[in-house]
Image 1 (cartoon, rainbow, N blue to C red):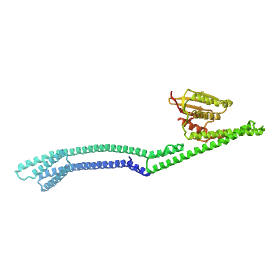
Image 2 (image 1 turned 120 degrees about the horizontal axis):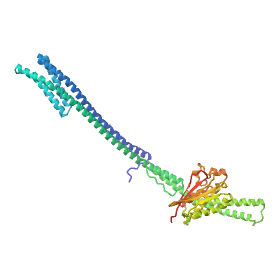
Image 3 (image 1 turned 180 degrees about the vertical axis):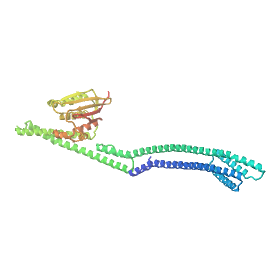
Image 4 (image 1 turned 90 degrees about the vertical axis):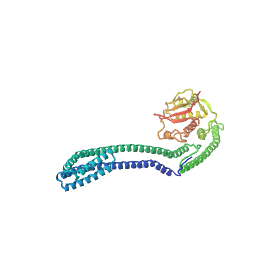
Length: 480
């Protein structure tokens, strides 16, 4: 059951682009969120660190000023120094409150409260008026001596502030590394998901295009039996339906062409037989003696009747082969014996041109129609003899495998040009070298050969060769 069926190929491309881009957008949004959190955490850490350093510096300066005012007041008793003492104490109290408000460390808060208590105690003792002069003097000297402890606490407070600042920096580094790892895993996962989506949509996009491509290729090769089915966007499926209609139309035209060629060829054979028979009667002198010129004309007529008969037979053979009719009378054929029989048919022609045939054959059985298989190798050997120079060599040898047997036919002629190689199995095709050499032919031999080989379930290839043409015919082997 299909959950999504795009109407057009363009909508499929846009959908694929959106789905592939979505993980990237999510990765970008996640990265922004993580970076924003890191920035905020860094800002808080920087604010706290700056605040601690600034407060520690101010506190040290205020404690120094307070101690100076306290000692001057104790010695001189000047009310102005007392006012300075109160003012400095107020500022120290404000700094300590700010210090405590911006920090939640227990040790730091303990030092702040302890320092505040000492400062308040010193001020209270210095400003105390009740009691005897001697007692007040002793208590004030004892209070002033507490500034040593106050200085020690201030130093401890500064060191602890620095330690906390370093700890926050380390925590920030750890957080950044953790967020970096998280971000890497998220981006990697989303990129991987995007890659999977890319592969998915590529397969979805390529599938109908590949189906159309294969359908066109089959039509080009003349396969009108395989239906054209395209799955994908509606517009591509519609194109597939049109290709299927074209396939049916071409199949119908092909059947009509086969019938027409068969009919025309059959109709041509009847008058041709009469002409050939008449030429034979004239040639044999049954209707009277012929002059030299008349005999020459009769020989030309008889020779061309034979050529025309062979051409009509080739057209009929190709027509039958192209119709993909199943071979009848399937039998087990000894391929080695059949090849020797084909070689014997061409023995006189090769002898006249001093062409040597070298054969390396094994005992191999194949299944097929004997007439068609004989035609296959008869055409190949005939071409080899036709295009081989005098006093040359033709090689035929077999290669047996478990399920197949290959027959190589190789000559020492001019060979087939690179330009002609892709087209040599097309009907009525004649290569440039054939035209230039003056060797005439119908151009149907290799086309018929290919069709017969395919009818037998085999394959034929033109192999690379330094000189001459080299064909390989592979046929299914009958295993004993």
